[in-house]
Image (cartoon, rainbow, N blue to C red; front, side, top):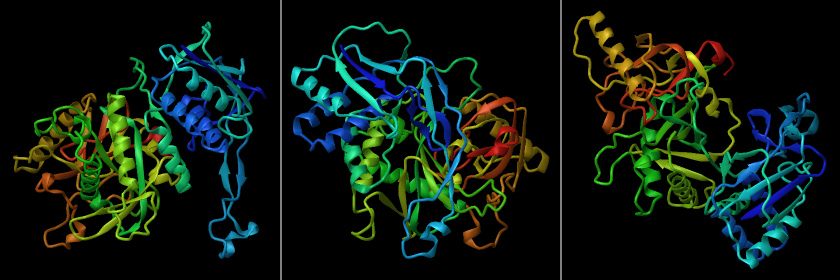
Length: 479
């Protein structure tokens, strides 16, 4: 057994769950502790024996966490000037900077000591010694104001409030932190340990709530009509990141013999400037979403493939392209550069707006129908399309909606019509990859009998950016 005790010396823990969540992160998860140890290892001169100890630690299963209850500290937001990244501009002067709202979440625990226990871990004496030295020199966790005293031990202890970790580290995490440090970018959080859903939770689809976001970094500028082809191109790039290794079915969408999978698998969603008062439909980025029940080892393989993509230079037009970017080469010859965004700041890039609960949802991108409508009369045709969309809800694990209203136009501001008149310019049509070419498209507003938890993506193109819905009304009004 291996234990780690972290004593918060000031009786306060300053740490945020993420940039968009004002709640404090209590107790601090093991990936936060691991990052602190890596920073200490770097400050101590990057000793090889301590590196081996960190690599041993990242291979252990998630620890049990014992922490007391806490009270979130109440504090008003503050407004601070952004960092100076344009020194030659007049806006870089302190008096000209536009101050941005910042919050500094903090937790006040009943007991300041948090314990982490790996019940099956038995480190060798040299590994334990290296871990002890790193812990002794680690003075803060999370924010620099969170002063701590850390120490490893192998004694058995009574856990009063033991709980499962919500995040974990994984093999390769140390290397990932090193790469992020060299690039000067914020690293992604650790892997999420999915909790068992309870009956009290609102109904949700098969799609997971942890998205990996890539934002527009230049090159060709696309609007939302190109979402499907760019999503298909990103999927092709991800497949190449496996370098001949077997791709898990949950990522490829195909079984080992090459047939289409009947199980939920990876989807790529568009993040567009839609749903706002002045939305213009510009494609701001793409998000990778895995199903709820994805095994940690499969999610780890996706992380490795993404890291390989970011490291490669051959996806760029220029050798001097930034290391943190990838380039998507479309069949038209256009190139779209994307940058990894572990914690998106732009409102249109935040997955949270697609993850809310609501009874009424509307398509931001049109639904590609599973079957082409056969009815000729307008009313019969609309009923057939509505029935197809209703069946699509069941297909992703949602209840059957009480009402489906289909239309050429979306109820989401900024999205493009589902189809254009004959003879209209090519750029006004939705670009569809080969597997979806010829599918009938339609926008829809869908109402359920009870609130539904996002994300919601429907139809034959749900894995390639089509049929993605936004909640409207209720909580969605604060998106």
